[in-house]
Image (cartoon, rainbow, N blue to C red):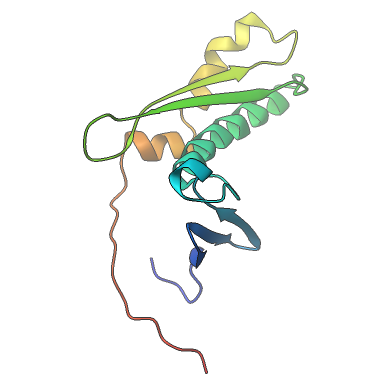
Length: 141
């Protein structure tokens, strides 16, 4: 899976801030002020939940366009709870897909099946193998 350029790079900026680079896109992640950060961006956990909500939204949008249905007003709201025991983790995620006005009731079940099969959802339900390797940094001349 290793290529010449990593798919995603996370660099430490200072304090609790990290800069995430995915392809040509970047964003700052941070912690809330109450947790010692500056709240300069979402937390990694919020980004995790956001990626699931965005994936559901993408699949919903594609379904609507494929069936020539309105997309205006489509929205995904997500709430999550952290576990109270160890290890620290998200214990539940509740998503609500807000459908465009006039969405046909006859299409509801099909849309539900589609969004529940988004890539991020599949990756949570069928957990990927994850490995972490520690490597020494190399100075760039």
